[in-house]
Image: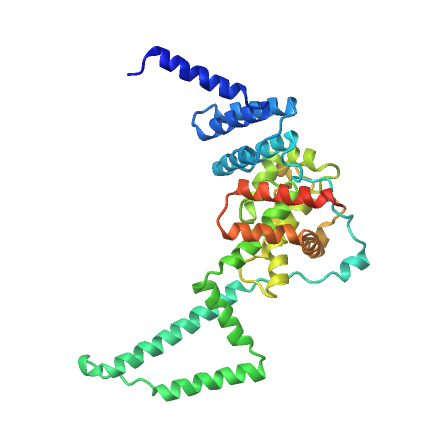
Length: 364
C-alpha cells in the first residue's frame, strides 16, 4: 500500500500537468471523459460543457466532435442528433451543417419544369421476381438432371431432358433476347441476381456517401441513417421548427428531404448508369405521406410555391438538384466514400466533411 505522501505527490504532479495544458485541451479532455462514461445526466453535462466552451471561444477538437456525434447517433434519435449538431455548430466545429452557402433555387417556371429529366424508375420488384423465377427453373432442371443420372437408386424412373437440349434452348433464348430485344430479359435477370446474391461494398459506400453529405449540408439530422419514408416524417414532426431555424427562411423542409431521398439515385445513375442500391420511389411516397400528415407534421408542404398537382414535377426537380449538388461537391463525396469503405463512424464522416469544406471554401 502506497504511503499518503506518495499519493499526495502523485496528485500534485497530476494537477501540475493539467494546469500546464491550454484551456481548450483541458475542456476537450474533460468532454471526452464524460462521453466515454455512463450516467443518466451524461447528455446534459456534455451539452452544458460544450456551451461553456462556446462562450469562452474554445473550439471542440476533432476527437471530441467525433465522440459527441457518435454518442448521439448511437441513441438513434434524429432530435438528439440535431441537439448535438446545433451545439457543435454554435461552437464553430460544424460550420458546414445547414450551411448558408447551400441555398435552394426558386421553383422553376412551367417551361423549365417541363424539360427536366425524368426521375429514374426502380424496377427492383420485377428484377427480383425474374431472377427468382430463373433461379427456380434452373435449379429444377439441375435437380432433374442429377436425379436422372441417379435414378437407379430411386424407386421411380425419372426422365429429364437431355443436357444438350437444355443448353441449346438456353442459348437460343439468349440469342433471341440479345438481338431481338437488345438483351432486355437477361439484363433484367442479371440485375435481379445481383440484388439477391451479390454485395458491392464500393457501390454501397457510393450511395451512402451521397445521402450523408447532402443531408448534412441541407441541415437534416437524419443524414446518418439510410433514406426511408417515415424516418424524415418523424424528424419533421419532432424537430421541424428547430431545423427551420437553422436553415433560414424560407426553410422548404420538404424540398430538402426530397433532395436527400434522391441523392442515392442521383449518384448511382451518374457513376454506374443504373440503379441497384437506391430507391427513387421513396421521394414520391414521402411526398404523398407528408400531404396526408401535414396537419400533424406542422410543416408547410407547399413551401416553395408548389401545388399538389405538381408533385411529379417537384420530384423531378429534386432529382435534378441532387445531381447538381453532388457534382458541385464531388471531391468531398468521393473522399467520404473512400473513408466509408474502410469502416468509419458518423462522427468521423462529419470531421472529414468539415476538414474538406474548410479547405475548399478557404480558397473560394
